[in-house]
Image 1: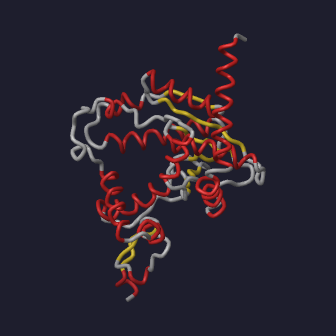
Image 2: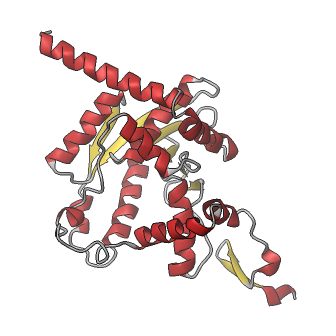
Length: 287
């Protein structure tokens, strides 16, 4: 081994150790504690589980992988992990960024290819929605092939409250992003969201503290967006919702937790109509 290679190995080990130590110490309360709380509260990790930790290459899923490694180190429950990366058609630079970050953080990833980006390129209406649905199907399928019974996604607390508000304002419904779900298409498989109680600002703080650069959305659609396009013209509904919550927080510091808790405090006696297992129930049915 030459001197340069030794230096590279030493530098990689140092970055990994710093990232792990920051989870255990500096960001323990902000990151590991809510991660462990979600796992316990919603019973996301159970004895004998084999969890496919799905890594997109972004900050959320990369941190989720490190938090899984940390909670496994505590050995309170026996379970296995597979760190699963799907390449839906990344360009070479984005693929290499994911691989280099995984190496630097000590995450032993398993990569498989798909042609999702090429398929979605031909779709004009809701390409992001279709891409997300296709991604999940591919991940379920490969995870099951690898003997996993669960897939873990990196959605965080801010994703949850934004989803609640978006459903009301744009979907005319009250619903939330659940902490775990049974798959309807892959028997015996579950989806879990262990980052459910972790705040996005804390994820960003951990990333910046460790001087890490992660992948943003890297589909062909976003790559082809004009750099000169105005910010307002390219705002997604989620970005609009994020801004709305930030504005509301200026006058109500509890608005985020209130949005989150609203779906824990649903009073069916004051709901005009609701749906359960696909069946609609109206308040006049029992009035």
